[in-house]
View (tube, rainbow, N blue to C red):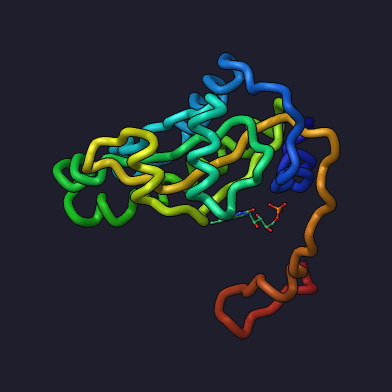
Length: 178
Ligand SMILES: Cc1cc2nc3c(=O)[nH]c(=O)nc-3n(C[C@H](O)[C@H](O)[C@H](O)COP(=O)(O)O)c2cc1C
């Protein structure tokens, strides 16, 4: 798939079929995530992958935003204490930004592999951390549902370029002269 098509045709998938996500595909996704930029190259992220039905059920119980049929969840976590030790308060604060870049790599690589994904931020962080057995300093920054799907959802409307693009300053709209 060409890059532009990959970016534009990726969708948040909320209806998955029962096919399991293979281990080798998960490793490809996490490898893509590891090549995303991190502040100061501190690489504070860890990826906890859940495919066990019992654990998935518990995760879904505490994640109202999680698609019910998701057969696999990747929890992007960060050791915030380690981040702080290595890079100070700034590194701790910036870890959620690192997780967003990692997540986007996962989303695009998954789409490239014809897997669907959905970012989920609606979850109870403490409960998910407990279910995943995370050590105390590890925070759950994001959940990503991953799985195969039968039908790609329709694209939700995006704003137009002229609504969001400003050249040189706020008043500078789309230039017509180039
Ligand atoms: C930070 C963030 C949090 C999100 N949380 C959820 C969520 O909890 N549940 C959900 O179904 N979708 C969630 N989404 C997906 C958005 O609803 C989706 O990206 C948006 O509607 C645009 O659709 P598209 O991804 O298909 O282009 C989230 C997306 C982002 C970036």
